[in-house]
Structure formats: C-alpha cells, structure tokens
Length: 99
Image (cartoon, rainbow, N blue to C red; front, side):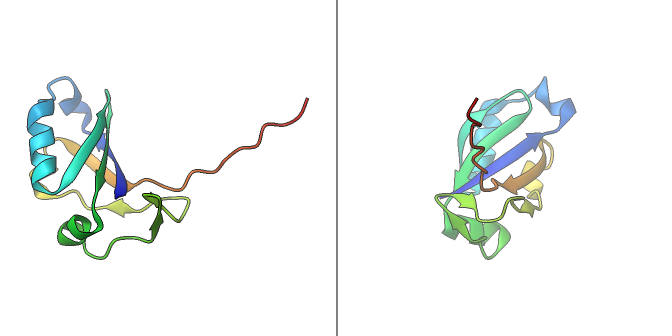
C-alpha cells in the first residue's frame, strides 16, 4: 500500500462532510486512515494508484523512497474538498544526542 497525505481546503474544513469525503476517496480505491482538522491520511494499492495517477513511485513499506515525497494532481472528484495530495516521504530518524 502506498501512503498518501492530503491537505483540505481551508474553506472546507469547517463544513467537511467526512462521510461523503470517505465515499469519494473509496470510489478511487483510496482507504482513509485518519482525518484531522486540516489533513487526511490515506493509503492506496499500487494497482489503484496506477489507475488514478499512472505508474506508482518507488516505495518501501508504503513510504516514498525519496525525502520529499511526490506531489500528485488532485482528481476532479476531490477538488472541492482537497487542496493537495502527495505520497508520504520517507522519514528521517533523528538520533538523540548523549548528554
């Protein structure tokens, strides 16, 4: 599964119909894993990703292999609610300094 992060439109946040958004996402093969005040976390299979956006990015454990992730065009069915979509970048582990 490829992990996605989405930013909600500022004007949408107060009036968000979460059930409708989840339905629109599921029609594209996207499974919502969390909805916050400003963001949506989700995941999508490589096959569904290819149907929506084309060839999926290289990934490991669902995270993009690069540090920036990959910005994706917002499908028209989501444009009223979603401002931007990207793959989730690989996280850098920060070592705790010894004191």
